[in-house]
Length: 368
Image (tube, rainbow, N blue to C red; front, side):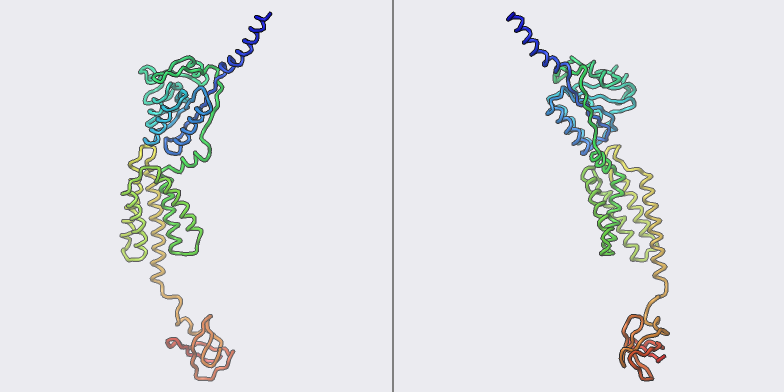
């Protein structure tokens, strides 16, 4: 009887441990963004969560066009330092691991691909050339097949059969910051910042354009701090804007405006030419910006020139023929202004007079 009770007690102790072993936990990190400092920080935090949360494995479900080398290196370093196995699964069908994504995939303890995916070759070719470890149609199927495998070179034994999968994806804030790093958006924000701050500089007190320009400029500077910027391209953009402003104050018959537009277009095209392919500017966007700015500036300049050539609409001679009110025997109030007055007839306070002529700062008036 004692032996039977002892056996039952040992069986009761063994059941919880067996149940825990039968339900491993896996953190599935869905990475579908470009590789940049924003997404790198998010992915590394999730990998750290897999380790601190004692997950049996971390799976990076990968679909990326690549990105910045420095960010890729930090992700790879995090993968290699992790104390839990990292599986990279290029999925779903149609996904790719290009550019920096290739190195993230190769740093995994186990690399798998869904059918009809790409990592420089299709999934079947990659398996034939031993670039990947397996092809799996689904993540649960991959985890079941990987169970019991020993990874090389770190030697993890995978326990992933019938695993409980926790899925995580980048939140709104991460996607928003990642979108702001788009070089096309950075260029638009930078130009908007210059326009807003310039308007506030020449029209103090407007407030809203200045505040809007400051926000745009700070956001653009955030992008400049992340992407490799060509300082030559940045100087060309600033030179182009400066030439446009100068042309508004000198007579160049449009030569400075054309030069400014050319400098700005070349500057925008070369602004991020040192960045990898996902971070190059769209040529058609640059052309559109140049045409719109050129058309707006031509319209503004034509209006300014027509105003300069127009005869003065205000001045002392405009007072001739107007009526005024006598304030005292030497002054009359005309058109909201107090003028010295002379008249061949005596003037009375409050009397209406008509302006006949202007002699310097004195009006010749006649009582009505």
